[in-house]
Length: 172
Image (cartoon, rainbow, N blue to C red):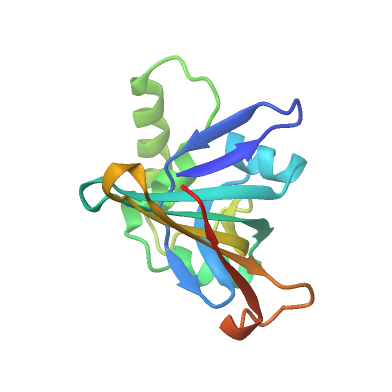
């Protein structure tokens, strides 16, 4: 799940599909007019949460969301199924709509519009990379004596080298 804070300081959480992870960060894609993208524009500090309930584990990631380049967005967009590309064009994400029928009509209109070839990358669609500043690894323990470890990015640590992260054990 991705947590953001809007311009009025109200928190919001939602599930996003993590598409890439690397030493540079964690990547997801969205419509730039969506609520999440608007929140990120107002405050680029975000949090990600990955729970594994059955294993009593979770990982929290806090960091800065940075918009991907058009080149990076296009590289991913062209790998999506055509229907998903069309859906990006059809959905006014996070906007109020009158019915599902409206959404389906938009989808069919985009299908007709782009039936003659490649579907272009919408200028309102792209991705964000969450550049981690803090990780917390949590493992459930007997008697609620959980194991928690915090990894804090050291000042000036742009490379993400593990040696330059401060690692601390936290009390449960």
